[in-house]
Length: 80
Image (cartoon, rainbow, N blue to C red):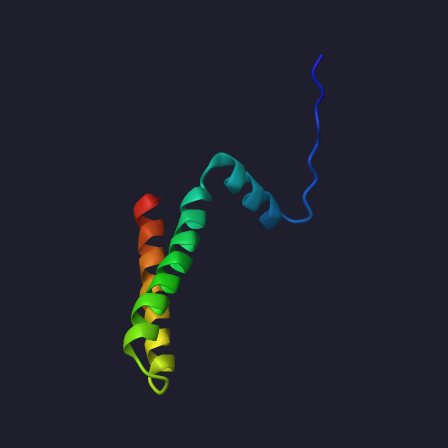
């Protein structure tokens, strides 16, 4: 005989989050966030720290952040 369990959520947003994670609809967002961090760290390590000095590093890091965010969002939209 199988047992049944009742899940009680605190609010409807928590229910939507867990149902999305369990159904696989949340997978593109997870991949996009991981891709964002990987791309930002790669750009920051190999381009910003190697070719730019201390004075312009903040501006170039912000550009790398924007490029990585755009690439992560584009990947999420492509996968969804």
